[in-house]
Length: 509
Image (cartoon, rainbow, N blue to C red; front, side, top):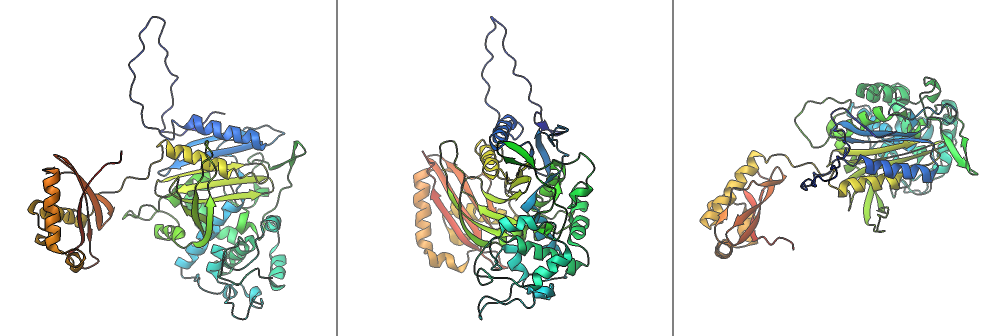
């Protein structure tokens, strides 16, 4: 199946070849790369992965500025009917479910029904008698569960098989106690048990089953009508059947019913539905005065990458030349967060489950997310999806969003910079107290005079480039060179500049 370009996306026409004897057309300047023009590259990347990893069916998609601009289904929903995978095929997304649980906790916090700093025992009495690992350990908090800092042992092999545990059995498990791997709050260790506890907290704080609360309060308001937890209630033929690759053949994995551990990995969704979720998350950036339209405040979503627990470093998958880079990462509310050396700030997660694998990368500063679901045990495809994202980034198809217009205060600060430059005297504009102390005004006047002598007359009509609402940079073209400058307001009610700098600009190369 070829990649489907969504409404509004351009369709690539076949290249016209000149007839014999005709002159070759004049070469035209190459148009900038877009996600749509990179569709063939993504197709090649994911079809190669599918063959190499023995994946019977998968779907991938790219969301940009609130729309699913590219989606492609590959392979079949099951090996009996051979129905092709499409954007409405249901896949279990495993641990990518944690992001829904994390946002539900934040929504309940916004509603005043819990606090992140509260001990878990305040909402789950079954854990009240847990023996802490040391006499000076503090209690496990809700935030600890959100960020994997509760001190529980890493439990991926075990946790995946707890999906269908019943409420009574989970209650008995909790009452039996917990052997801690470390003291709460001292370091990260990935815990599916911890997110199952968050599901119980949602139950008790909201008065609803966590599945119902998340579906009614988050999924359905976003229009995710094909998304939920109970795979056994699916319409016949609507989902991708999960398989394991074993002894050179596909073996069907047993279906796992819904249960108490679904809060850590039980969500089933489609590409079309999941794109609505990603569009909502991306809508939180940048901050704006637009009306709130989502089930959770945009400011709450923006908290997620700022509430991270440190998680050491990660090395990016090698590119075609074998190059990698190392970046720091953290974890928050169902997302790993890194400020990457190759793709920029990245909120990401994978999912691995019996019969399924999934991955998502979300770039809030670019307004783009890429995801993939597959129907083979633990086939997350994280490295492949990252490689596809890196290709889009390097081709210029997903640049960071252009900064908005400068604020009125920044424009006023820029006018002050021009006055100081033209008069050769910074003392003619409002200066914060640090300016003269950092570099005496007579020295600043002398530096401006020397720079003006060196570069000649300058065209100061270029706009200021905002760093934020109170800080910006500018570049002026001059007779004999260029000037780079910056202005920054002080954090005071009075209009004062705490930074006013001019320097010769020497372009690289």
